Length: 345
Image 1 (spheres, one colour):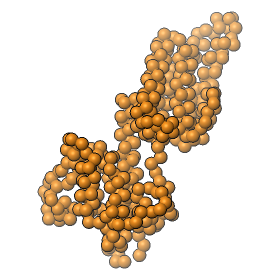
Image 2 (image 1 turned 90 degrees about the horizontal axis):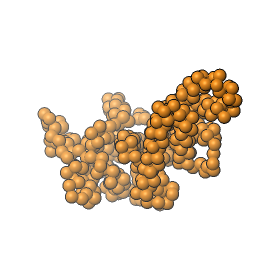
Image 3 (image 1 turned 135 degrees about the horizontal axis):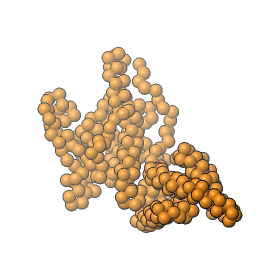
Image 4 (image 1 turned 45 degrees about the vertical axis):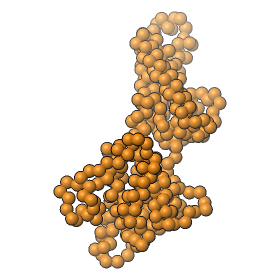
């Protein structure tokens, strides 16, 4: 292979490995996607299989149109003129503008679009075995495989980040609700309602904790904090397939440490706080009246610190749980073959 061509392909490979399929504004440059995917076919020496970029373009627009209701297309599909358009831009933007597809529309048809690119436009026969919607992409097509797999991962990571940002306001992670619906055999709306009820109860518990600390009822705050943290850990473990029957606080912590997604540092802090909690609650029960009178100031200060630490750990546990809940639905597919090394002569 010509060294200059090889160098260009290496540069293009690095480009697609870090390709931004969806910009921060939530829109995908459709022309760029189609042209770059066609270029991937060329770099894999299978350009004869590549659909025309315009065919891929038209396919997505048709799928969006079929799915859209009144007013949707105006939001989902917008055009943007290319400033200082020149003839050399015509290979990607022949009309002098780029077409921007919003993720709100793409989410409805992305799977079908990628599926039809392979099975309708490229005319690859459907597989007899159940696989991902992009299983028409052969692993030895280095560029096409990298680009399509990258699109899948980027798309779902983008959705997960949107879900993380929206969940605190809505009171529910859509990914968690979908997981709960599938696992419990209920519809999505029911799952959303159950999670919102749980979130509301947790919020009320946090309000009680704040009031208890402000009023000097530190043991109440400690007990409520344990309940809140335990609830996060219980739901986390349950989502990971654990079948739990009245587990104690220590067991919840230990089991969570061994699960994918468990925040080891946070769990170590919670475990350390558990010991402080024991000192506060058990010390109060076990101490004699004389001991309480003598060390009342120290006991109150110790209990106050334990209550405040517990409250802070509740917040940290919420942040961790909300960040990880989007992963309750697995969106990655195991590779079907060993990774192929980059371009060879």
